[in-house]
Image 1 (cartoon, rainbow, N blue to C red):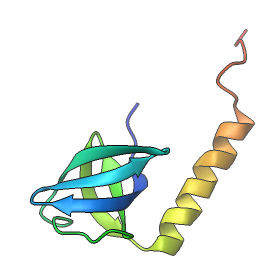
Image 2 (cartoon, rainbow, N blue to C red; image 1 turned 60 degrees about the vertical axis):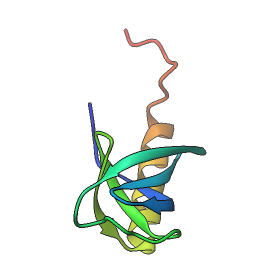
Image 3 (cartoon, one colour; image 1 turned 180 degrees about the vertical axis):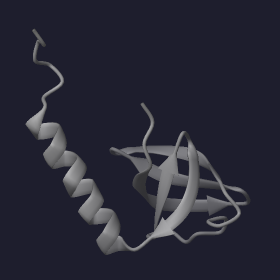
Image 4 (spheres, one colour; image 1 turned 120 degrees about the horizontal axis):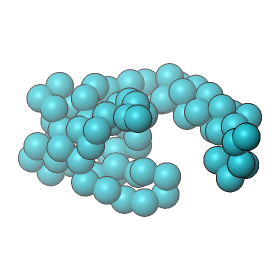
Length: 80
């Protein structure tokens, strides 16, 4: 399942953004709404495309929620 997740912009080049994906630097296609975003800004990425900007506070809150959710449902447990 795909979901929109905030990512930190590391670099901008034309219609692409290099973002931090869980500690790994990845290039993403940038929608017209976020093309030219500056390093240090946050964008929501969905299915490999940066769609919209979000504030740092909102991005960090969403990322914390996702981390907390993952801790509630560890992936390595067997489901009976």
